[in-house]
Image (cartoon, rainbow, N blue to C red; front, side, top):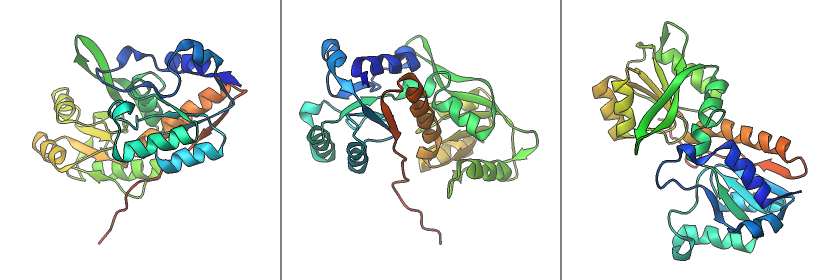
Length: 269
């Protein structure tokens, strides 16, 4: 088995905080915070997940895991001020003696992380980085990908849905328009600012895991086609990859990937 300190060191090398935007949560959220304690704490089993939920905590406990490595933090505030559902999560973690480490934006931005893995699963060649500047530093948002010539939005959407095995996706734009320059951002990877940036840089299509009325309206005005698949489908391949990497780096620790599910249903009339 490995120590918590050794495992955290591996994670910081895999996804250094070079690209972490201000305020983004990462690192230990629940558990031992000091280096001496982390070096003493042995981990025989750990679980990797997208979100920390009560069913995920139960599955992690059943696998003997004492650590959850999550993509998203379950807490938006200090654990000393929790109420409601976050407090219930914290109770379950403490009860089952499970620590939580978050690997969020860094693992999406870094080479070989969520964005690169998603492009690889889709079979797209990465030709550049979709990035912005925050506080004087270039922050990768996603990847610029090459797509086959003469690919319509309809054909592109059908291809993406099949490769990611999703039951549905949403889109903006004319299904018969061609997809030429693609920006790909895994996860909840679309804001009005990022959409405007894609338009300014001349990317006509934006593939991500989120879409709402406001963004769709903006996209129609800018004539940028958005293809949005369920968010978990864009992140799961990269978290599976992380699990495999950790199994190789720490063979004496058992790593389990807890498969996510879409937390909502779609009614088709």
